[in-house]
Image (cartoon, rainbow, N blue to C red; front, side, top):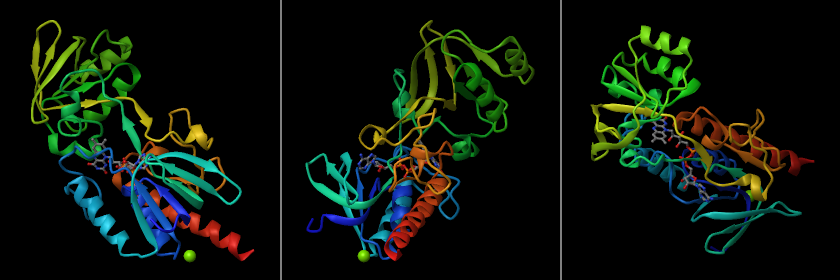
Length: 302
Ligand code: FAD
Ligand code: MG
């Protein structure tokens, strides 16, 4: 790539990053989007709950987005992984895995989050297909089906309450001793939620579609869908080189204008919000793009 200096570099070119890129490209900014090409929803067969794109594949949505952003000749793309970001006197210097360096006045971090898979055979293959993280994304498709929840403690109680909205045929799997209070257990029993403490051996499935759960004690339970609360971590550790603050939940701390704690660095999408959806990533990217342009306008005008 000839030009290595940009007004703005966006790290991550999925829904949030592309949306920020569109806003900035249309603002006549020289933009580089660097993307490693691994969005978190890549395994899910259909993406739901994003107006105008309900039920499309995740790739259809992002490919259409990329095509539309590529039309702006102010925006360039680079396929690769950013491994280092350093603040300098004029802005930021970035380095990719292959050793290429780029400079920018402002940065937008749109790198998403990574789901940490539990050590249960079959879980990974079913993730996003029949093992689900979010009822708003996938609950309608498995409404009234024989459903499980894999979670424990407070989160399990809250999640069970929520999922009862989509199905009454519900079992809570604590995968070991239940940490629910007596009161929570009684409340769930009233709604006929079974609580099962057997330990998972594996999830038996066909192409990611669950057939049954096999337990270490030899028992089996057939299921159509399993919701799971699993840990999330940042894909790209911006706190390490740039010093961006994270929240207690591990998201990048941002203000009402998508600004991080480091001047000139903005964040948008999954890495900066608990409300994990394509619509929200697109909205945050759109807003971050406008806010970065505004900051550049103010600096150039003064
Ligand atoms: P992502 O889409 O995760 O993209 C981040 C991008 O940044 C990736 O391309 C990644 O490779 C890149 N990247 C990361 N680090 C670097 C780096 N260092 N250098 C360069 N590039 C980097 N939402 C819905 O609205 N409807 C659904 O049906 C739905 N289903 C889902 C199913 C699953 C299994 C999951 C996990 C999520 C689902 N979601 C759904 C949520 C939705 O996918 C996310 O909210 C959305 O993808 C967030 O967009 P993003 O751009 O912030 O992050
Ligand atoms: Mg220019």
